[in-house]
Length: 100
Image (tube, rainbow, N blue to C red; front, top):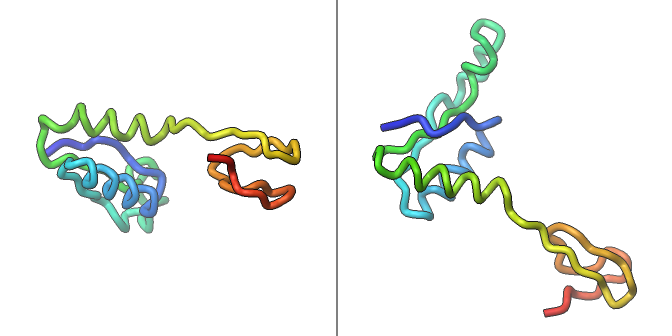
């Protein structure tokens, strides 16, 4: 069992673990509630940790998390001329759906 990384909070840590599991990687999160001890312990030691159960899956897990953190954002120009960025599937100016 190896520690893969620290998550900034429990919600993101749970999301990362779910994505790793969907990729077929046995992963778990440790230190769920240690954040309450911040101040008594160094804050960086209180963050949730993501662990990989099988050492041989560590490289694959690193790749999955790196790809997750560098997702290309879509950009498209609506028929009304508005430039739409991010994960939006409809124009915020006129409401038209993103073209296929």
